[in-house]
Image (cartoon, rainbow, N blue to C red):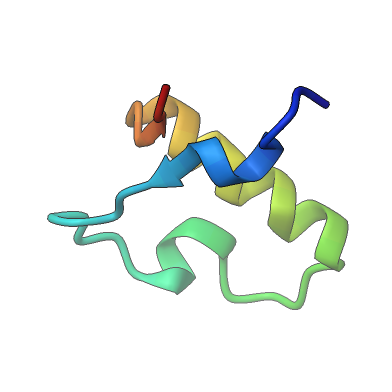
Length: 52
């Protein structure tokens, strides 16, 4: 990972109205699947920014 790594990344959820149940569903999930779904939402809504 580049120097500074995650310190240079920010995620902004301001204005998002999805509920956790809408993102994850009603059934229990393994943590790995939960992480995949969070990143899917972040990428699909272009919520990730890098501070250079």
